[in-house]
Length: 313
Length: 276
Image (cartoon, rainbow over all chains, first blue to last red; front, side, top):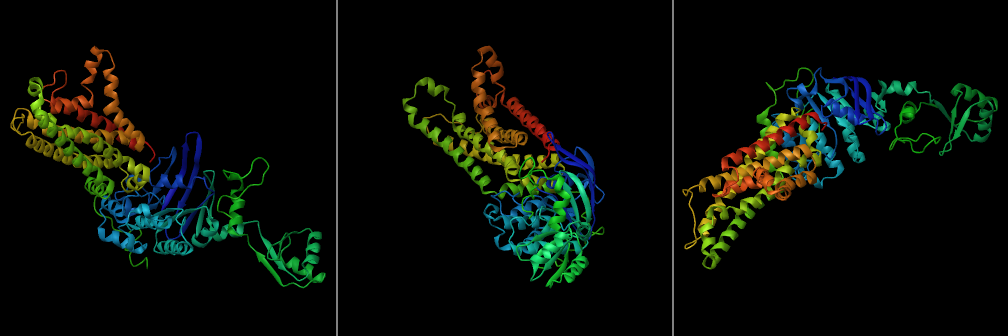
């Protein structure tokens, strides 16, 4: 269980995190979403006591991180993948962390095995790819077999296989009753991994809701239509006040009327329909809708349309 | 790989070890950090080889020219301090290592893993200073004793030489090792305050090499008052049997101890207060 109440953090005059309150419960994967620069990493650093909040409070299992008797046995945190001295071997890195919390060397070899780094455990971490470094970081979070785990952008630099592996790992860990808090700027990834999301923008909480509710709530519903007489249908729909977009795949996205109204209109023309499929907005769109006002770095300036944050397509 | 295969009980029932993490685990951790870097081993090796090598060169050189030296030079020749010259070259490598022990963690980001594993930061610094200080002292004493014995062996008759039982010799040899270890801790303290490798090394070399030159440029009366507080003067007074204006060897070493403590405490306060 992680509980944040009114967390606030400035860096100089810049407000990084503003009155942020949320809770992360055990047994599910909680996604931590926001555009780059929204304050996700800062919040994670405050949870593990690396940065001190200017105001507010955050506890892990009801305690301040600083007061945990055995931090690594209680909380595992992957904060940045490359946080390893390039001259040190993967095994020595884990060993020095293990020793500080009285964790045996057997466990070091165990977690190296779990993340698939046993074969390169004695090589210098400086030679590791970003993906291997991520795996080593994940091994470090597993080291104390903690109940609470934080992952800051864990799939960065991983190949599709690695991404699937991390996804399964996180879901498995949550199933075991652990508290899993994982940040990402990729909505699509969260849709597959998280059960619940905490969404922030410009350091402020935008929403904390279950993923399916986020999708249902979105106003961006539309109907996908396919027809051999698409042009006629398009004209008729637009005359009826609908907004239509001709997609690259040849289908027509219709906003306004629902599938019943579109079907009836088609029948009255009459036009043959090959597909009539109501679509909920993709998570990406729901995310864009929520964070539209809070994106820190706009692509353009002035009246230019809001650009999607990097990576969020 | 199945995850459940490796997990034991989780949830509120998970059993924690008794007590709390503390200095014993942190000492083991710092020792692992120190010995797991090849650069540490190289630097320590270089300190030993360079220290002993330069001492051997200096004494062999003196012996070779002994017959052509003036009577005055022969009388004022100090065999002990000559054989310990290499120790002072060791200051540079030990100082750089003291800096890297701390800035290496900041540069690589390891500091965040370290402090997340052990959030009581003052305790982390204490463990680091203890482990590095101990290793630096052992290496420094090795260099000074080996330099001394090798140097005295090279100063064959008719050149003057001393033994450990000669007046002040043991103090000079053991003291120069202590001095070298303390210099390492001064560098560690500076690095804890500054956090960046280049800045810390510059500050360290500035204090060791540049500051004495600046002080020397002051009016004589003032310079004489200040010079004896400089680390290099303290070092000189430790190895030399006849220094007039300087502090005595033990007073000097106590002062060095004070410098190291002040810098480490200041570094510790900043370490606790600053975001990592």
